[in-house]
Length: 282
Length: 283
Image 1: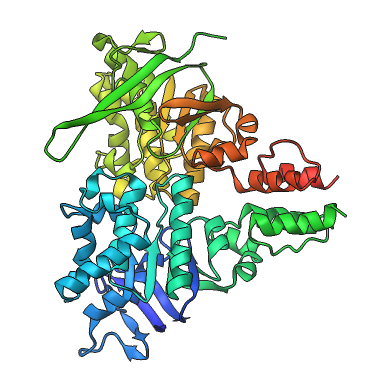
Image 2 (image 1 turned 90 degrees about the horizontal axis):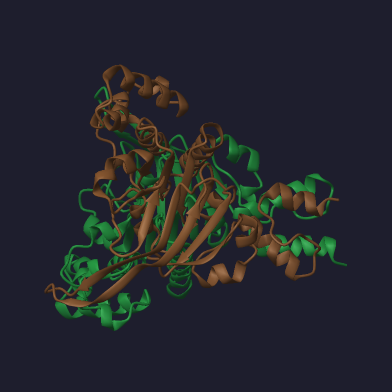
């Protein structure tokens, strides 16, 4: 599925003294099968942006197109769109509510109007995809660990078989082991199912490790858009807007500045290791 | 060494797991015979995976939980003595994860005054303490603001100011940055170090962001309620593979240096900062 934002501006509480512009004239194209990292400090417009992609928010000005169709059109099926563009909010486990895990995962597909059989089939499939053991299917979601709860919540969105999966800080509050597991799960889903993934994250290291494209937001607009190497090459500009680069990038930048012939645009520890070994071990 | 500000001896905390009908299913030992001494004026980080017992441990340090068998002493006071609970909570202040759950005042200075007010501190003295706490947390210009107009990092600073107004000898920060962005996170950690350095307040920081533990005097790694490792950041972060097995990690620069060392690049055993690594390579 292809999504296009065409000159989108969003103002909260327009025509009131509290009016606040959260998005300013944003134009973006999101193609099929990419893994996009969306970064920016708090208040930069990330959450407002992602809520436009599945029609939860409507642009104050401009349009959003899904496969060429304007999603604001009266006849456009926005309910189906919410199944095709799945959104996993921050701390999604706070939204679990059913008596058992299986019922909770069924909630999304059921609301899409699917038959009981198809709903259950998809719920099973999604629970398998997130790696939860059948023993927990009939347990209360509230008895699970934090990492497991988050998997249930992600399964609830996957059960709608979205073509685009948007995750708002999916690793917040998880320990490093839990974070690694969730991120590699998302990466494998993206590869195996050809899904488009949009990962909102505060961790430059995570974004560098998984994304093939990074979109940087600041003050409601897109200020950078490119590969991790292209974006993290602009370390000074990132620092100016309160962001940073991965430590591995910083090390190579400083070595390069000190006259050591390493590539200054590496983005992961493994890449940096290869570059540095190339210079120091001959 | 001066007398420990926090001392635990075989601290053990068990709770009964129950099934959906409320019948007991078994016993979970959240903290398991944990003994440690924390020296006054030190900055200690406690790290561990989700469910390792960090928060249960923290709740024993200001008598929110009281041990049944073993013992905890805060500034020499036994937390089993309920007459001492008010003194213990004044000596050891606690800041939690979610700033929105711990701020109650309509105005910043009112929120900061809440603790000393409840302790029965005279009004003039409260005024003095609130001024001082706001000054230390660099919040003086926000004193008349509504807390809900502040950023996450600023709100956590208000929470810390509220604790500080009780003049504690020790502050326990239980994952204070979990809900903050990198700027807010840095703001809170910087503040904790400044209070430790300039005011001599003991800081116990509970976190699973390894970067936040780099400047601590000592790190305790908890696993299954026990101390799995302890030492200076350099000692602990040298054990990259063991930490990974405990579902933890090391800062990326430490990991990069570890990769390089394994490949045969001459480097010290644990590198903690970008500067250190660059300086070690550029000779």
